Image 1 (spheres, rainbow, N blue to C red):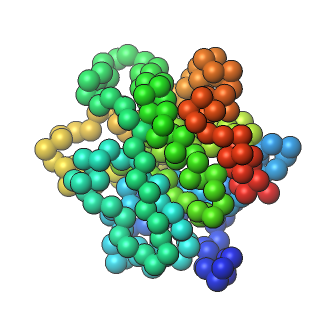
Image 2: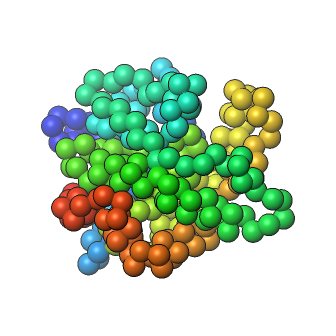
Length: 258
């Protein structure tokens, strides 16, 4: 561990995909999205943007390790009732909690049909969210774009869908290849079984979680990004239509790329 800027501590994170996950006892999908190759061969900075499942589970065991990351801002993408139900991230000195809700339909309204194309189903849900949740997605990307907010953690419940979309949009603006974005998204599968076990313990009334809630096939993200570009010309074009400014897009590249 070494000192970061402004006297904060940062935890050294190995730059291999196998080690980008930061282990916690009560969170299962916390990882750094740095290290990917972006525009002009520049690399996404480590220890600036993290993604995670819900941070409300931080307990005494994980508190010191989380504090050591020096996180300044938490972007919580959960629905208001999910925040009310589970609670928010515990208080830490210097930590700002930002609740940003990209509005979208409940998945129960369009349930996955067993035997159908799972990647296609998920990509359709993501396309729906990108259409109805434009303001929230723009707000989330805008928070990430402001270097004064970094390091930032983006999370939802499982850290897969809403979080996956925000991180995919951000990485795309940074020039990361779709294949790398999809591979990053697919890393969530490693945490799915642990998350499922936790959900079975704390939410037994929900029964066994549907496959679509746990799966993160890389093809889903490839479909989503390709179809978003087909509709808007580029990911930047989509974000501009959602309200992200050119200055914010430039700021993203300036402070998140080496």
